[in-house]
Image (tube, rainbow, N blue to C red; front, side, top):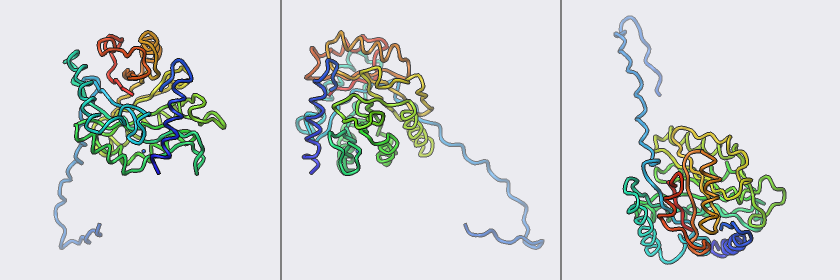
Length: 312
């Protein structure tokens, strides 16, 4: 059933990607005290301080990720070939960056589209399909087999960002699971908008809400710092980016999305990373649609050099 449901959106995403030049592509009571049993009060110990927060991966490391969904190869390289073939290809791609910049150890990652935008409203009218926990668990197991991170990508459709983050919260409590938001498929500000037919947008308020959830998880569960990625390839996708406020324990990455020539991708990186100095920079590359595909050397020549490189 899942394969048939997601198949339609895979085609929709491909069609969307080619519709514009940029494209883009789940206690007992206390005893009574009397004069006969009273004892000297014990000195109360100060409550133990929480353990120090582990050091964040960024900016000392670089992340190289494969994007997609195993139910539809059209959604990205993560779903192409066998799992072991995909992991081998990821390791090879990551090594290319490690060789060019030994000062930044490379961490591999799988970016799973865990909430998939849909071209139809579905039973709840949300235009989104949540991947079942069993699939997410399977991808987490696969990522861990390669000592990689798992990034959960969210395409909300007409569903609130907070609702989808809440759905994924049991997984986000894991120390090696991160979060990505995709404004392109956020139709909450377009009445009747259909994902893939129109380009959506996401507010700083929604993004800050996700940041706050991750911050609270880090503090309450003593987790390593979390990573939040936001994909962007048009200015209107994150119109009030200046109001995004990262919190301690959350590393924020703005990722330059969209396919095209190296010149176009470099210009977009300058617009959304160099000129929007929030957190760290990332870029997404497309094995098929980029013409030609930027080399790792070209990617690392961008200023500032991206600390996240995603391949779709």
